[in-house]
Image (cartoon, rainbow, N blue to C red):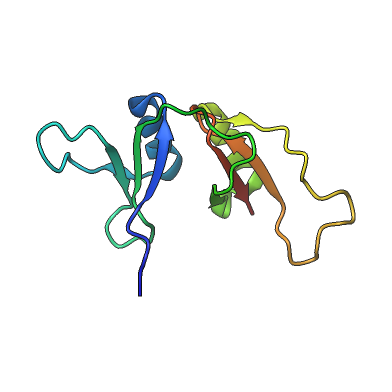
Length: 127
């Protein structure tokens, strides 16, 4: 059965994207696999779960309503504190029209905030 080997993001500035995601996740950059390998690949610390995230130059803009995105858990700091930390790292808030209206969220649905990384790739942060 197949498993995720890595998540690949198209970006316009690999170094900027790599720096943002490394700081956001606390992951480290994998050394190049061969001379001239310019992909930035971030890996979780040893013993921690997670598929590596790879970044490469993309000639297309980030999608306003992407068909796939990354979901992050805010962890013990809480949603508001984690969102503020990510904003200081270079994320931006996304005016997301699909937030549930007051009272419409299912009791088991976690509150979440939609952000964009410095390249405009959308991601969610939840409690």
